[in-house]
Image (tube, rainbow over all chains, first blue to last red; front, side):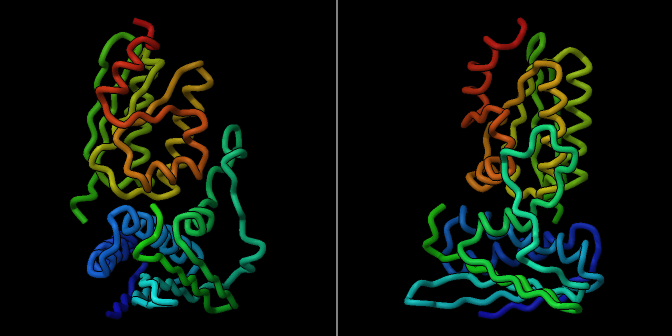
Length: 138
Length: 122
């Protein structure tokens, strides 16, 4: 099962991607909690792509079975300037209170909510690839 | 996407204790709607706020960052913020972003009310 979405930058378009996760994840037999975690992760990936990507984004969803374990694979691709993933902020709950800026949580949430995350970024293309296993722990 | 339209109500349950029920997508607009309701309740004398998120299944970090600002406003006034009816993913998101360090989470509204009523200035 492969799904490809070409999404424009319009308000709340990230919900289209979240709805697709719900449908595909449900078809794979994912638990509701796993679907909701993947939905929040794709919303954050879409928000990053809309903020930094400079135009239309492409979402791909598919299933894989590495080592016999079924998983949902989500890719979010944009054509922005790119960034160094190693330099991306890794926020921590301990720095929240009293901190002036409360933004920049997207990648932290994606990494915490998904089972595997890979980011490839070069000028003109950033690809966030995430896996959520069907039998993932909540 | 209409299911995700924010539906919100607010009420003063007892003196000093305000309740906000919010269902829908907590993004910048949804978060701001909750913040506006919270500000009205706080300015009206509620030092304890319970936010019931039954019916909310999807959030984003921008919306949660606005909830963090409510928390800070309440903490400045020595108030108390609590949530109930969180999905496991929303609960985990609040934990990751540090909201649960300063707010209390209850499984449901009845439990929250019985625990918080004693703490509100009644």
